[in-house]
Length: 309
Image (cartoon, rainbow, N blue to C red; front, side, top):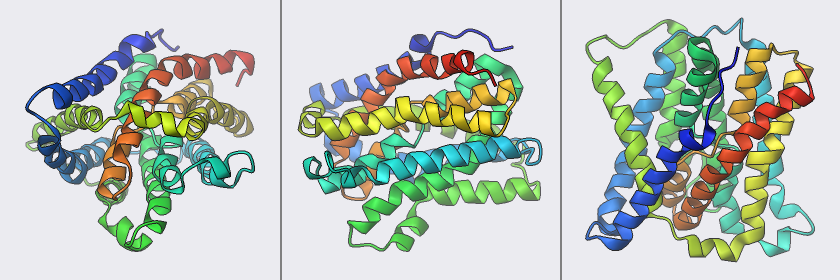
């Protein structure tokens, strides 16, 4: 039985941290010169540690969740394909900047795992946490590879080199291998690793706010609207079709739909900035996606009532 949840209340802490980062950077002595090293700390150390810990902390039931994993991967692949083709759409292609399209593509399919874990726990308890952890484990490598690819094509570094240098991909794949081998962190180090993860959430969101320039969104309204529509409206519809096609249980379908409608990852901004793209534009999209999540999450769950699983 899924418990009721106030989505606006759940998303408020993330949005407020982004806003605080923006205000601190713009109106105090803690300006961009301070926040650029913080971005590197989050991207190369804090967030990879959180990803590794969230995947390795509990065994994954690969057999019992195989259909859920397939549904999550299939939903993600369709969203990625739609996003990649945006610059080729006849009515859109000539109106978007190619570099902005490459940097913003990740907005349409990456997700905020912090909010996802919190929602799953609230709605379905420990079993919900385990189910969404499975989706996180199998989708993070795929989504990060898909995020890096269009930006690597437009940079001087090769695609494989960018993948090998991406700490999020390395951390996730390493954690999956450890999980398969049954390896766990020693109990004595778990509290330290957990606190590192908590720090990554706070600093990652504040860094996104510090790099935000909402005025830049005005130049790419069509592109911004397209990637946000895929993230918050189209992807939940795809997820519902996958849940029906693979005959997921009601609980698995609900977790998949939550997963499909989450706000985009706050580290989208950091990845774009680290690869030499317009990080400020992406940070603005991250903020808008967080706001859109207040509507898209109830919308996604309401789909279960329209088309019973």
